[in-house]
Length: 224
Image 1: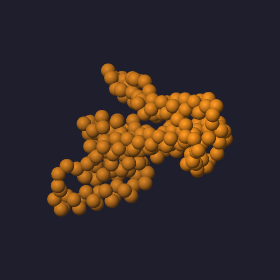
Image 2 (image 1 turned 30 degrees about the vertical axis):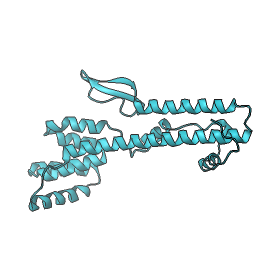
Image 3 (image 1 turned 90 degrees about the vertical axis):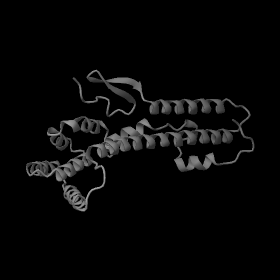
């Protein structure tokens, strides 16, 4: 039985867990949207270049406008996908470590103290030792705070340790662990590459601020 999602690090693949293993169901909706934006930009560039009545300057302005629109749309999709991942992680973390209902003053103080102590843990080794001590002493509040710290810091071994005595939490922890780490430099680079658009050659590799200025230029004759 495969319990680890082999597609977790590839934002272009949508997968579901079915009959004991993860199965790819194709490209996800967001990356299909990116492909559609690329196709529309290419079509617009070809259409503009085919217009014989336009000056070279007018063509470059229209192409700059099309590229800016595509770039901004893909940037919005990129940011939305990262927000979705971060939001899903926050939801799962609240489900696992959140508290329901109002706490009495003593309990509230105990929780704040536990969170403060857990926040000072800087390494997974320190967290593992602290979790072991908390569980040996029966300090469930501190153990939960340490588990939340482990989830925040992506300390997988500590989360596994936390769920060893809490099998009901194992599935939620698995889901948290399978989400990509949006603070990871490699993931950020891959994410940026997935949600990117190549500048049309007609713009000559100019910086984006120059593209924006060109796109804002007025034309004597507007063309679709």
